[in-house]
Length: 170
Image 1 (cartoon, helix red, strand yellow):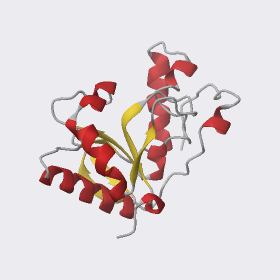
Image 2 (cartoon, one colour):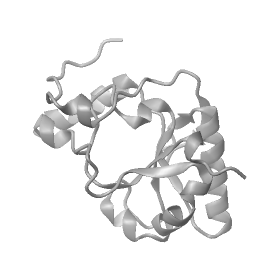
Image 3 (cartoon, helix red, strand yellow):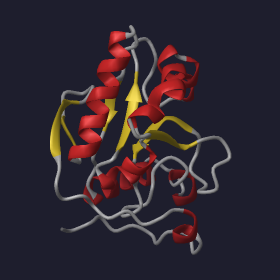
Image 4 (tube, one colour):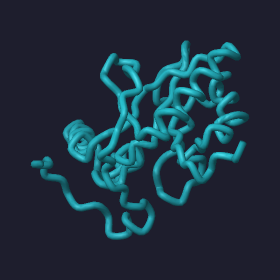
């Protein structure tokens, strides 16, 4: 795999943002909002589908904006931000350095909803966000980047990560 040339991350980056190995065993979860095929690990996929379907049954549409992302794709995203004139420090507030994105795990999802722009803070004012705050933990999901998170990554109310250890036992 040939990654685009990137400047190295800040010296303290690995201390703030954990390395995330790229998942290898993924299952299809349907298309994302751009009709790209989306993938998660089997446990995360089952939890995502159950959560999405439960929310829908309560009249809350949850839209899959993104799921698994390879290290190569993450490098392309970061390269694109730099090409648009962002400094590396600015870009890293919104996109993790390749090898450090939770999307590599196959357990992270970016969630949107109808009537709300995707990947924008205003998602926090949506009924979908309120539903997630109340219910996501039942499915093993938690918001990764709340306000003031020590990683230095900006507040992302749309970014949720699955962990079987967070899922309450039935």
